[in-house]
Image 1: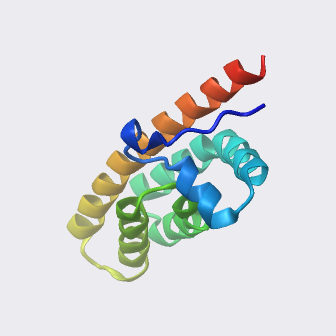
Image 2: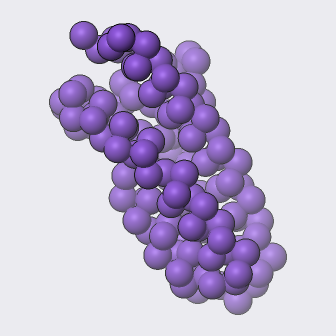
Amino acid sequence: MQQTIDERANNNYLYVAEAVKKVCDIDLVHEMLFMLHASIQNDWSEFENFSKLRQFASAANVLHGMKGTIPIFSDRKTEEIMQKTESLLRTSSSESDIKSSTDDLRFQMQGFMYELDLWVKAQQKITI
């Protein structure tokens, strides 16, 4: 049996209970979180690499894909920063604006990935 808690008191970036309310299926949410956990590090590394190479259109494409899933589980701030960063990557000629937004997003994503990793580890302990 999988445990559910109101993680808002403990989490700042990952909100499982709110995702369950959005999706209306706890098992599906848990399955999606395990799949996200399996792919997010690679997606984020790809985004970072394209950003460092100044291949902004490619970075925006990677971020667009991530934007399809992460907002289901994240806070509104993370979603807004993802949207802003993607827009800047596609339209801005100001590398300082892109860097600033990417730095803000990096902070949010590091917190999100950390909390996702903790959630997965907790679920693995529950099912053992």
